[in-house]
Image 1 (cartoon, helix red, strand yellow):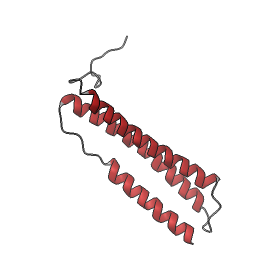
Image 2: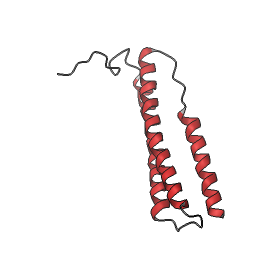
Image 3: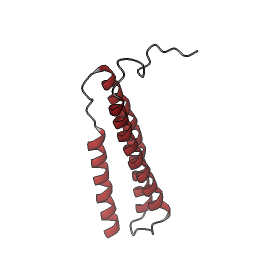
Length: 118
């Protein structure tokens, strides 16, 4: 019923289970970060008191939830890329997720600080 040809999961050599588990732990850490951003977005929108800036809560919430969604996608793509590289004995792929997440969190922090002060 299922065709195994072309299945990246089965291609290459099975990597050492410790590296596979380390890759999975990294993926789960990204998931925790994403869930934290999602929870923060919901909390900002529905729990925090309104800011003096009109639409500040909504903008902050949508931004945090959007970064959460992007974080999930980047985490999955990274996990797949690292798994594939390990199976084929290739160098690990470069990650754009770390600098993107750092920039997004810095932007959220600056925006949150500006909105809180105004």
